[in-house]
Length: 257
Image (cartoon, rainbow, N blue to C red):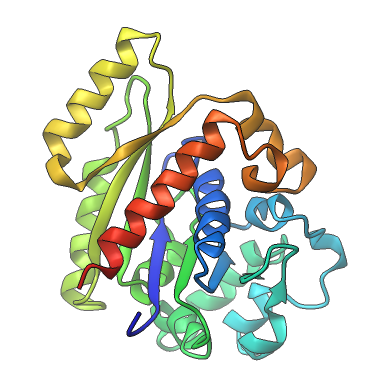
């Protein structure tokens, strides 16, 4: 690859599989011999705990680098998976968003932090479920946006607002920002509703909808409680096979040039 791809994983609705997608996609990109950095930009810190890191034991986190108290390289930590690193967060990130509001160039703080992270092929930013300042920072820092959409009623609710915010960021702050694609999550092929939602999303997003769908899968849901991506928890599960296929599809989209 010529340069790193920074991807914001974003949906302002909670519970759509955003963090699950961030950590499992990162794990399978790393297994495809890509160097990957996960940036946990959600104050809930689920990507941090989902990769086996206890936030209460962190010496420094994303909150420190966003406000300039530390350099990003000193905060990045290695995970147990080869080629997969983490820029972790803890609960101080929520208050650092308030600190950011009073800073100059506040929308570009994360971009400045990640300008240091040159050793990676992919940087995945796990965004909070909101369209606040942390999310704007992610959109300014990223070239691409990946939107997980749950295969349930109201799936498209709020997406038009998200696309409008992306358009505003593109106009004023980051002209390079593009939609990488939409991935259906928590898909239960036994229900007609899931198929209806898939068809509706396909109608709206056309070729931006990934071919791979992420199934509703017990092993996938329980993996974070063990602090492991699904590749380490149960690599033969349906969820594992789906994220492995998604990683390959993303590599094809991102590296075809």
